[in-house]
Image (cartoon, rainbow, N blue to C red; front, side):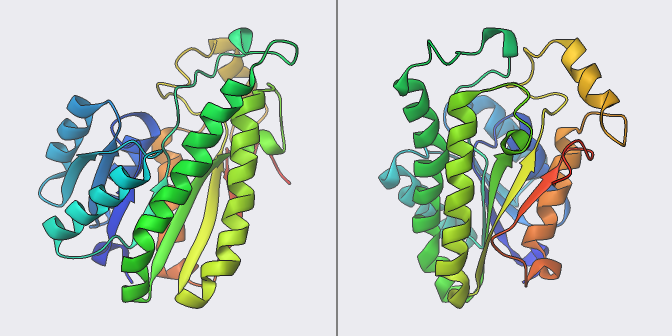
Length: 253
């Protein structure tokens, strides 16, 4: 299925990377479901910017019932089920290494919050989208990860552990859903210049990362979002269970 024929759900699309992902898919002609949790004004403004092919709907991805209701409403509105799910939503997190919770002080609730957002949230969206994907005989699930697996330059213990669990879920879902024509992949970035989550990052950190990439620059949200198009496109029809790192070549593993 071409991207221009798809209805694409982007979670956490009201701002930051999510907004860049929504714009990338809309640019290629997809209809886009702009999910948001609290950023109503930003999400509705983005949907207005993207035109009639976009719809902003609220749902906390941790709430299975709310996610199912959101997809049902979207299907009624567009007359088609979701074909691609981009699990981008991030629970409140700031990439500020100076303020991170360290090993002797971090609380399990920090881990639980990130696991609920990344893993439970992804499970809820996948389960809600599965009936429609199976009806179409087509589905694309794209989970947003991190290069901190390979390069934990700042030990964000809770965030990285949750994303590592999401990578594991990516690979087990790929095996489970492949016979249904559904691929499941992860797209992992490093620090992006700039999102709400990375706004607290000192400029010196951006400079350090840029100096250590072959491209000598920090990846932008728009550049990262473009890579997501590959996984949803016909060119990736035989690609599943993979983790593609998009960070300007900082991590080469």
